[in-house]
Length: 61
Image (tube, rainbow, N blue to C red; front, side, top):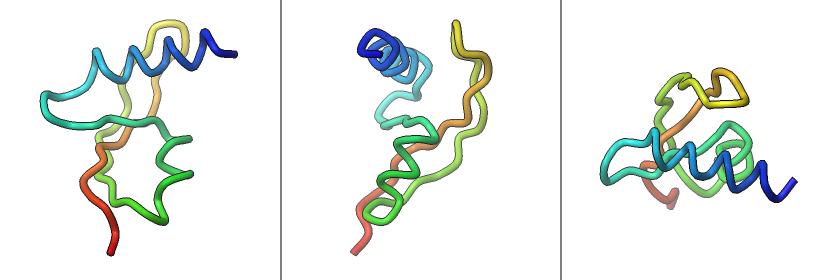
């Protein structure tokens, strides 16, 4: 499990946009009460297929 988590985080970083924080659906769901997000869309992730991703845009007040 640890290896999968690290691999997914690496893919989020390597497929991300400069100056942004890109997260998976699971991270979005866990943090959506405290943070705002913009849907980025699906990206192909090696070994996992297409994954829906989000960009963290700020902290909710």
